[in-house]
Amino acid sequence: MANLVSPMAGNVWKINVAVGDVVEMDDEVVILEALKMETPIYAAEAGTVVKIQVKEGESVSEDQILVVIE
Image (cartoon, rainbow, N blue to C red; front, side, top):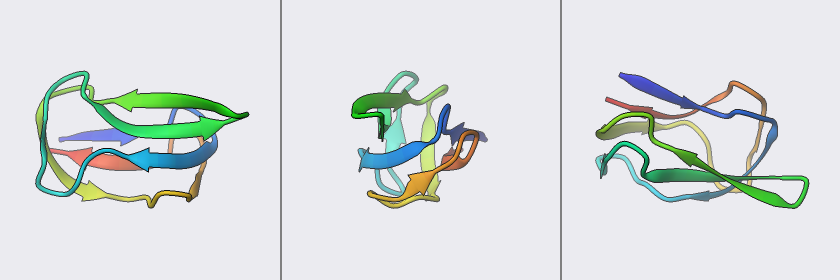
């Protein structure tokens, strides 16, 4: 199981997956926005999305869990 975490504080701009989606390593899963810059967050391993812990527009802190991939 892999937890996809936020590398920085910012806002969730877009979520590109849904629960049940199969992702491959390096698939773009979430896009964060901080300081008017978009930062894509990629899957660290292949698997199935089992939980999305944030919503689009939500503020997140550094190291906050965004998505759980199993």
